[in-house]
Length: 503
Image (tube, rainbow, N blue to C red; front, side, top):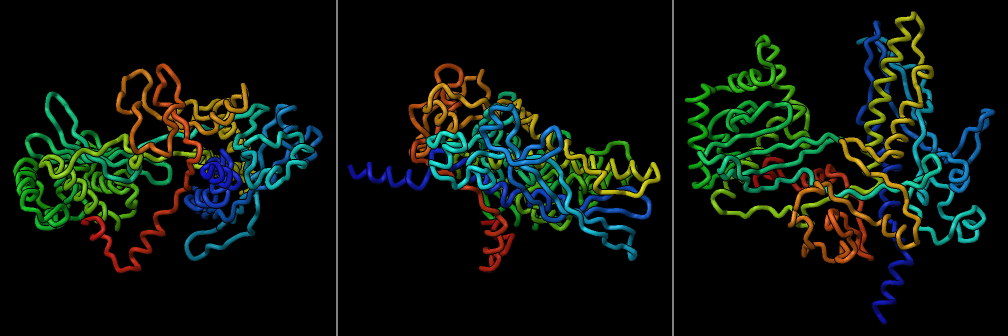
């Protein structure tokens, strides 16, 4: 009986779809502004200099525009009946910066309507937020309805929680290639929605290689570390490990760098990478291109500035140490099915990915429109350059079809209204990105770490078995905190950045 009291107390405070609503509220309050700040300033090619600085973004309350041009508030029930989208207007402050160099001056800041954002029912910007049972009935809603879904063109749409491997953490595994066992340390480096798989591999001949996007094939790790700023062999060894067994593994790599590739200095290393990323180009261009690729595509989560290259060097050292330890039997393979190595993308994070993509398209379009205005000898006008349907349509199309950024399909689904339980079940569903046609026995199994988080019995039969799961009844999902706060705190305690990588 006591457990019954506990469960009742839990559900007085938390609804069954609170995870989605909290995540969406976090997106509205923090992530929207963060995405705008990532862009910051829009540069144009207009002669005489013309830039636009983005300021605060503001979300209105859900409204609809009638055929006669009048604007009024819309309720979810009206949106369902009239096949409309339940969405709110977005306004963004834009400040023109006119002139170049010393003559730069800021124009008048204007707040521009940039498009519509679909509103989740029950979120803070929804008209139903904080309403009593009687008020909900008056608005035509069922007071027992859990909310947590969207209304797009009159259809109720759910964003299904996506399960994924943890980003920005080193995982190691043994891989069989051409009947040879290769020890791999890999990390899904994720920054501002861009995801890059970077690996360090130890081949059976004892040589270490690294792979990352933007680089054709693999590159010897020692050359890569040299290019990132490791001056001497001693620096490279210090960045990896001072364990004698591991150091012995590195000697052959350092010899290979000298004898096979003739790389002695940092410029030699950059030249080697430049020949791979920009073959047949002049030397200056090759070196510049090599540096750009290393900044933007190698471990982007560590940073994308030139001064971050040495941090990437330390990080690669940590990955190399992990791969060698796996080979020497000092550590075991990481369990990909352990729930600590998984992260869930809730409605807020999925909307963040979609909005980031749609906003980048809008920024490109604004730049194009402004440059077109000047070609026609018109004064650049921000108001005329912003076409709000660019953002609105991109978001609405993804929500309506379920085809998401990054090639995912079936992210948004039609809400199942067969019964009340079917609705609740769908809102608490978790989907794995693994292919349905392959066995994946371990991924489909019930893992011990899913205790209390994932329901052990609610999963479909057939090809989706174990890949489509559901939250346990009292499972609570936290929204992610920004890593930079933790890093600042560690720095306050006097922890050196290089020590954090080393230990």
